[in-house]
Length: 63
Ligand code: FES
Image (tube, rainbow, N blue to C red; front, side):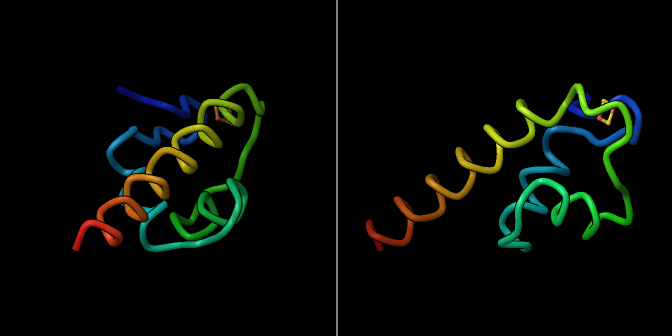
């Protein structure tokens, strides 16, 4: 599923980038060589970054 239509960023691509790049949405998009355009995806993208980082923390605590 595409999260960002303007940049053709898929959800799984964004989740992988969120684990590699500890920055905000703009920073994570930049790590993919993209930048926000219309801005309609930003709230959803920010939620995905939070979700992905929370899951990474839970995994780290469980280990
Ligand atoms: S949908 Fe992401 S910038 Fe337009």
